[in-house]
Image (cartoon, rainbow, N blue to C red; front, side, top):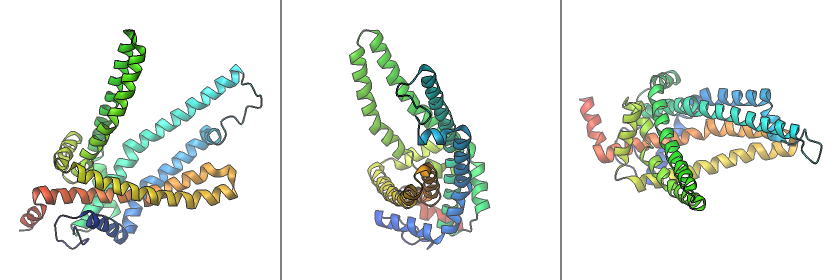
Length: 308
């Protein structure tokens, strides 16, 4: 397929062929891929809206100071504002964790399974995709926790270093070192993201554990960092533009007609983008996984050997 979706011919793809294959596969399997995304994204969007409304987060987001008529905030009002901020933080953190540990891995894994089946000219279905995704959820959560631990550990080390320098009487130096370390950490995090970008396909399609999925991705991307970085950056730009257009379509008319419900239109736009735009990246990553295997492991020969 690499240049022709579903052709069964396995050869490496140029950037243009990879993008063409990504959007061709998306177009030809639109109903399946959109339904896979909708299964997790629509309930999550409804849960977000419900929690925000029930906890008052939505009202607070629209106008944090709406309940304060005095020009000077009293201690009681300051405490109320602090409680509101803490409530917003608690709800937001909870939703982020649900998204990070359940919604995103399930949707990405199910899409990866379906895309792989269509790439290899095999039948696929919503149920089969989610059955495969559910069986790998534990490994995916382990992978995510390893990455979060690595990122948090890096930031924690910087924080501890700044505290130690501050305790030693070099507070200004500690702050400077912390800032420089965080700046230096950005390219490191980008490098880790690129080197682990095909960990999910490895976990889902090769049934690797979370740790071995990361190792497998690190090995596959080795020697292919800059081409992979360029492809993912290009795909991110394309999907960002599409998401921005979708957001404008929903948010601008809504803000003009019902200014008080801007928050609701923001949520709708986010849900629509997650259902219809999010899977594009998953498709691209899955095809990238196969492209790298073709380049480095002769995947076409392997597939031919299995068919004999």
